Image (cartoon, rainbow, N blue to C red; front, side, top):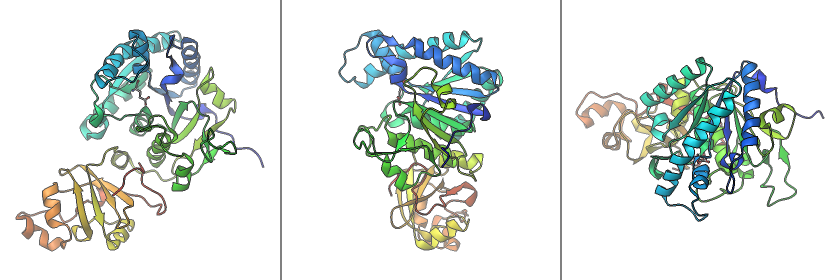
Length: 388
Ligand code: GLU
């Protein structure tokens, strides 16, 4: 059997590269400059070959705490934010200097969750990043840690990078981390675990291989990487996970070093539906009966009659998850009603709605144009962690 090989990186049009903090920052000595220089060489090579590269880089907090000499113990929120403020400025300078060596400009973009979850801000962020690419500058993106508190954070840069990749219609997302891909079980726990070089689809069986979350926040663990993969793959973006713990980590992929490729879905949803399905925090949940599940799979809108339960805090236009009676998320969409009206009309026939609400209302709870249905019955939806 011939071994699977990943297509050369130059065959991709637009690549998002996510860099984990540990690759860039050493707790004691600070920035790992040699490594960054080698990454800069790889990026410059790809740019010369006509590939557009976007960087999503962690490291602000880790670098800031080293620069400020903060103790090893875990930091309070405001200390992390202060560390990020100091670290981010140093990180941005390091990227600007490194890419500048190749006569490439770097442009810093700091995002908060609402910049990608609110449609208008999403379009605005996309326009800015597109313009940077047109100007041949490399966007260097991170979460705006200085203002993001727990309720409004992405929390991990794996999911942020997936959101950026889908927003920018990239054809490849590369997650550089401390592990060279997905194994049939966590390899530090099971020495007989086998490496997987290609994954056609992230099914519950594949997710089970990732093991439990790495930490309470599962930051950087394999689970968040697979969550990122589901967001990316559904939108037509392939994903590679490999280790960044070597110099020239991108050309290492082309040299055939070990990596896992997660293939993009062959029939990706359109740009509008990509935005809906990649929404990271649905504002509510509608539970629907079997008839409604069948109607959604047949491409119909979700009518109030099939809705058996309504939960959450949402307004008209917010993203909600749609779950079947077994609690499995089967679709996600933009709701046509505020919570109070949705509660009143759930379970009622469409011709009764205007009378119940006292105004001439739309018939669908979620119109099919605003609805993304998961067709793979045995798989969880885009984010996976959603329970109804
Ligand atoms: N945004 C954080 C930082 O730059 C890192 C988040 C993550 O590593 O997932 O320090």
